[in-house]
Length: 397
Ligand code: PLP
Image 1 (cartoon, rainbow, N blue to C red):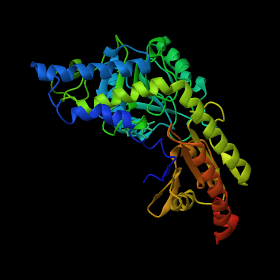
Image 2 (spheres, rainbow, N blue to C red):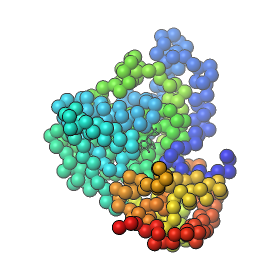
Image 3 (spheres, protein in one colour):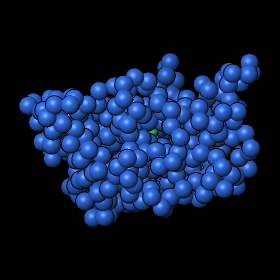
Image 4 (cartoon, rainbow, N blue to C red):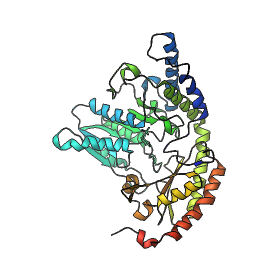
């Protein structure tokens, strides 16, 4: 797999060699339980503490404000459910139409039972054609009954960055808890949570070069929290279950690497992404960028190639060992554009031909050259091959 050109880093990332090395002793000789009183367990507990400090440095918060979890989805669920529990009597949730399913599907599930009085009222704030939020829409959604607002830091499909600082400030003014899903933002943009009006923040290890199966939730000091996993006294009574030590150590190391590399590497990644994007838009007719051109993560480019199917592009890229992902998913034989592109009102013909390229610190100039060599002829061929022509792919009335 070494020749693969991996441009799907918003889906998952390669485990950094330094991270693998750091976690290895905890799969071998250091297998003690960090809660044990003996020295053997105590040694291990010190490494869990170290990981918490490494992650706190990346986030700009205190180590005690970090709770290790199993993934981003768990962090999102834990945050929102806890916010509801600590806000008795408040029965309203606010989120956006473009959240990851880890937030959106939970909110919709909580809202489903609203009719029989056991559920919550849900406001899903819309986005504009560039995937941006209108701050006033968030403000107007807040009411005396609102328990929590959950708005992502950066969108996984388009990379669009939301103004979380200003949204958090509005929530704080109104006495409403604010949670942000920062699974795609952590390690890619600088953060100093101690200076931001954010109550809870979710992240996931496998998006920043740690293995799958570990995440974290930041809970600002003083914010009430009710455990999602009820059990033992681990994680300062905030999450039952023996700590996944090798994975936690890995996440700590990945956070340290991300912190050290943030300024230089993300600038380099942005240059690669910009060149890829600029040249694809120049060389491929009827191509357009999805998402705000500037308010975006440095690593993400979501481009629509009109009148071709994104899935077909992916398959042909795959033949060249190039991995990307599309903004439409094949369900029951029909290609459904993603809820994010639909919420942005991306036209049918463009949504179907959307491809997301998401880069990492491991991508190189040579890899971008290869994609630029291979992809424009693929788009030309697919358009020529299409038996339907442009009209057939156009949206039905
Ligand atoms: N939130 C966002 C924005 C994501 O992109 C993802 C994963 O793609 C998640 C949450 C879920 O993270 P995990 O896969 O660790 O559960």
